[in-house]
Each structure stands twice: as C-alpha cells, then as structure tokens.
Length: 337
Ligand code: GDD
Picture 1 (cartoon, helix red, strand yellow):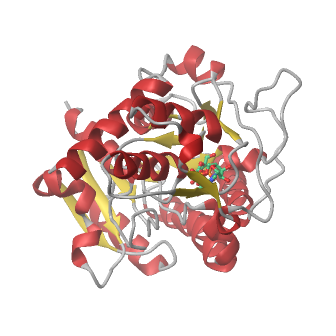
Picture 2: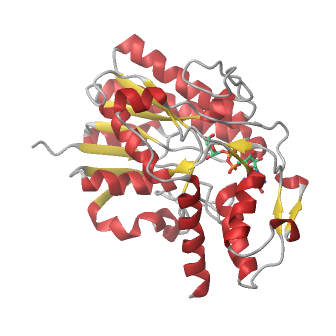
C-alpha cells in the first residue's frame, strides 16, 4: 500500500463572518477529513492572516493530522516551494474568492485569484510534478442563464457567465482543459453546483437563512434581510461533493464532470422550509434589501449529473431537507449553549 500524498490549495475563503484567510474552507475541511479516512497524507496551503485563529478554525480538530504551508495562489514562488517540498500524488485546487456578489465589489482580486491563480498552479504542477493528478473546482456559475431545453445544465450546455466570479471560473475551467490537452496532464474539472453544510459561511444564502431563523426562533434576532427570493439553486451537501472530487481526480481518464443533486428549489422555498421547521411563517420575518441583490443575477440552476453517476458511480446521500435539518440542528446547538 503506497500512502498517497494529497495537496489541497486553500485560499482566502471570504465566507466566514469575518473576511478571513481560513486555510479551511467548507470543502477543504470535509475533503481533508475524507482523505485522512482513506489513509492519505494531507497538506494544505494557507494564506497568512492577522488573526491566526481564522486560518484553521474548521480543521482545528484534525490539526495534528495534516500539514499546513504558508502560500498564496498569486505567489508562484510559494506554490513552487510547496510542490517541491511535498511532491504530491494528487493536487486539489479549491482555493478561490468564492462569493458571487462580492465578486462585483472586488472584480480584479476575484479574477486574479480564481483565473490567474489556476494558471499559476498549473504552471508549477506542469514543471515540478507533472505525474500528479490535478482537480480544479469549477462551478455551475459558469453556465449563467444558459439552460438546456429539458431544464438542466450539463457538461455540454453552453457557458455564458453573468458575474466576475463566473467569468473567472470559466477561465480556470478552460485553461485546465487546455493544459490537459497540450501537455498530456491528468487535469480534471468538477463542475460543482451549490453545496452547503453547517460549515458554510453565513453570508451564503442557506446558512444565512438557517442561522438567522434560529436566532429569531430563540428571540436573539427580529428580522432576516435577503435579496432575490425567486432564484433557483440545485443545493447539495458538501460532504457528498468532496467524495465526488476524489472520484474525479482518481478516474483513469482526466475529464470534466457535473456534480449536482438533479433537483432545484427557490430561495423562497428553502426559506419557507427552514422557518416552518422552527414553527414560524417566513413572511412574518423576511424583508428584502437591495444591497443583497446582484447587478446581474443567475436565475435558475438544475444540474444533470448523469455522467458522474454513470461513469464514477457517484451519487449524493443527503436530501435537501436532511441537509437543512443538519444545519438547523447545528445552529440550535450553538445558540442554546
Ligand atoms: N448570499 C446571499 N445573501 N444570497 C442571496 C441573498 C442574501 O442575502 N438573498 C438572496 N440570495 C440569492 C442570490 O441572489 C443567489 O441567487 C442565491 O441566493 C444563492 O446565493 P449564494 O448562496 O450566495 O450562492 P451562489 O449561487 O451565488 O454561489 C455559490 O454557488 C456557486 C455554484 O453555483 C457559491 O458557493 C459559489 O462559490 C459557487 O461556485
């Protein structure tokens, strides 16, 4: 048994309450846990932050089992140094400025990190450890408002991104394919639809709704301010999606795969479910605030993951309701303490 070395890239997560350079985004922490259960040696890159607590808060429970390295997707010398030191078998690039609305406020930082950052990774990978397998976290945001006639987005659906984030991810996706073909690298894209969990940053809509609804339920808040309630998302659980990442990177042929639940719900339906589970009517508490609206909005996502299910044998375990229930229970525990 050869113990494989996996190298994950964690970048500034921006998804926690504080804009922090967590080494441990939601996916990074679940992926690290999953790889450890499979016997991997796990290394992760972390950006320096003035609050050291924010760098490893989500992986603190496994801190003694993983190795962290200071680095930055925009600092090629740091990527070179880490890859030379670790010489990994698998490289997961899941670092990004991952918040779509914030990408309108910080378009240049978003594009540098999410587009140029991927190129920096690929260049170091190609020169230093080209025998490794590479996974790129691509996103359903790349589709924009493009939907196939049957109401799904799939690997063949045209991509027309509607945010700086989506545009930056489309570059990352394309350059991975280009490097795969040009240099015969085992570099793959996972086109992941929205995925959530109790570890989701609370400025993404699911965890924002759940956390605030629980606060209202316990008398700790009065109102919930949201943006657009009538957009649709295909929401899965991050734990299920990191399993897909591992299957994608280990597939004999490098390829691109949609990862999704094949269902869709509006923000309104999700909000209604969460408030109802807590014995409340969402209409009594939710107000719209245009600061949470986007200059251009992606209206509807529903992914067809038949390819991943057929070729990789992947399927999600969590239902939409089970995922939200887990998040509700998490916040009830936090605030009842
Ligand atoms: N964040 C947020 N906050 N979104 C809101 C709010 C609010 O107050 N009110 C309504 N929404 C709507 C957004 O306009 C969007 O239509 C939907 O809720 C989901 O927003 P997010 O949870 O912020 O996720 P996202 O779909 O923009 O992006 C996520 O999924 C992508 C995959 O499609 C992120 O995880 C991306 O990094 C990921 O690539």
